[in-house]
Length: 257
Length: 253
Image 1 (cartoon, rainbow over the protein chains, first blue to last red):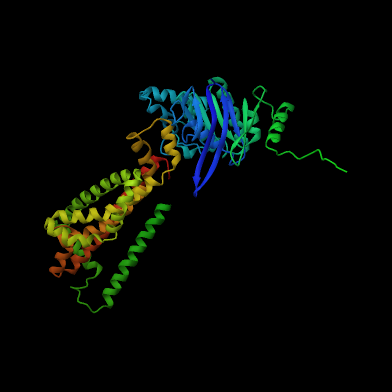
Image 2 (image 1 turned 180 degrees about the vertical axis):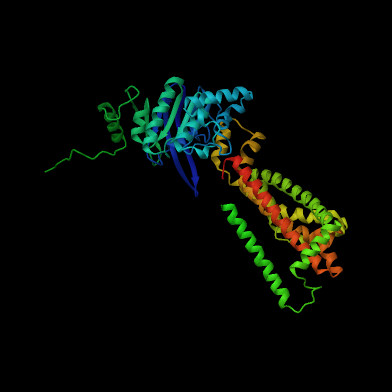
């Protein structure tokens, strides 16, 4: 069985007395070390699926298994990075990075060394003693990435992590995250609504559609990192996604005389 | 420059206040024994400082204040953190709190004196009540308003109770708690005087009653001035502390 195995997974809520299906009948297998993007418009259930795999909000139909174990609660082995960073504003940057190490019973000196090492990795070693509010959005997200990596997780979940950043900062962080992933060999599940971002980052893209949220198709991106956003192959993959999302202008018109 | 300006405002403002007082003294027909001038009050103040009664009164009042206010804040924050984390329990506690909250602390006074007699305790109890409800309710509301994301982060990194309390809940709620603690200081100080006027034989509140009994309006007004000054000073000090803590918290500046 594959590393992450999702079978007939569904999530329903009772909302104002009526049943609402956020996610329906998802089947998906993810291998170790893959970079997966969950892509779709809002309401397609991509965040619901992410929260289910991360254990914050388990599914109520079917099953989600990581390494053969059913997911029922968040695990310290898998870390989630949020769109609004999730940094604790009362802690300095380095203390934020140390957060996950504290409950692992690592002693103070070692914690600091590890935190420094990962801050260096995200090029923020000079901001160790700053507070989050003194940093830009992109820097905050890099702190969150350092904090996630510091606990040496198996899987990193990212819920629209670059959604609050401007386009140029976003592209830089996309390169950073690819760079880091290449070296650290993590499994990454990345939620986004940005088609180009998905094509740029993912090994495979899970395209999802709303009402009810379900998987429309899975596209493999057979291009090497780092990808040229203007190359023909890149555009071809984009085209496939537009197709799946039915966002293409109908070209062939049928005539009946 | 900013500091200089604010000193200017303080001096002018106080001078205007004293001017109005002096003017009222000059135009009124009351005997100066009943309605003394600012100068007479300041002379009385000098007299109280010289014979040591002022220091003794301030010491007695501050003792009660520190104990009553300190205990009240500690217990209210502690209970607030617990009740805030247990919303289902709070649903059962809240109606009683809402019933007790609007009762003026002074309304408890006769009852407290009956139970504990005259002395330090009634004033301490009044101060305790005055600070308790606002701090408790603010703490509960601060805890309930904590962003769910912080709990997700804590959950993800394996932070559970009791660490969750002091690593996440207390710091996340702290700015709002500090604000409530600051506001409660003012009302606690107000009710200290009320408590001492009825239930004590020493302190600033008692000194006001004592001055009235001896028909020493100059001492009475001098004591009122001192109460105002100490209130101002306490507010200033806790304001400094609040700013300093918030800065260390990295939340606000």
